[in-house]
Length: 282
Ligand code: PAF
Image (tube, rainbow, N blue to C red; front, side, top):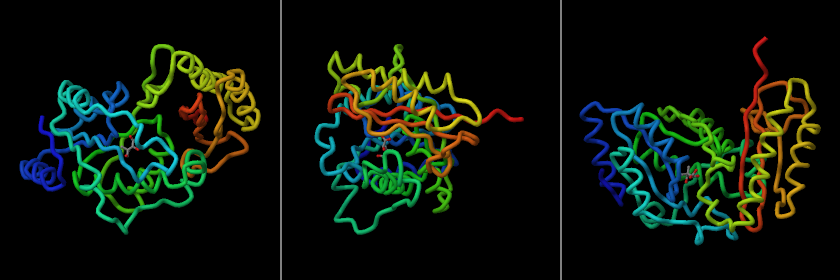
């Protein structure tokens, strides 16, 4: 496995792969890898001749009062995990190599208005910008993203379509701890009491999956899911919403493919979870 720090080194390696006619899968990450990331890398390994993983805590997707400095980092561990799964390349740039007084950004309208976009106004512009840059640097055939960040996945799919990137975007299922908590690098912020409290998210998801049905009012579904979270004293809801799976706009009635998503503070840690649902074919 090779590790690159610069855009040029990365391009040279990928150009050589392409000259040999090999396909390339990219797994973009911010590092501190867990089994969720491992599942993306494994899938990329199965479907491509070469696998590149980017490890870059992207400053432009963090708001001024968010956790950019505190975001967990452990490159040695990440590197061992990638090597163990059989990744061929890790691209691990410094912020200065990725951003030199930038004036150009990629932003997405409408799909970023709700859910996480509402409380994190610069977030998706930062994500779309860095993902576009990674696509231009690595020129992958396929790129892999987790469904835990469901709004991010929908936004990247739309960006790829709108901007004609010749890249297949593959969404992979949420990976959970045994007790149901969705795996996240931010779970490391939780103390023991908060870790227990955090289970209210997956409990709320399970409740939603149990009761959702065609024709149901979104308000009814959200009421029951919210009740599960509000029963936990350490939890403070940012949002619990039902949106159209493609447009990310809120729906009143559940009668089409939807994303049911939530962001909840457990103490100071903001966690997300979700599930997707679609009506059974008639
Ligand atoms: O999902 C993430 O870890 C990040 O948002 C991504 C896609 C790597 C962009 O920085």
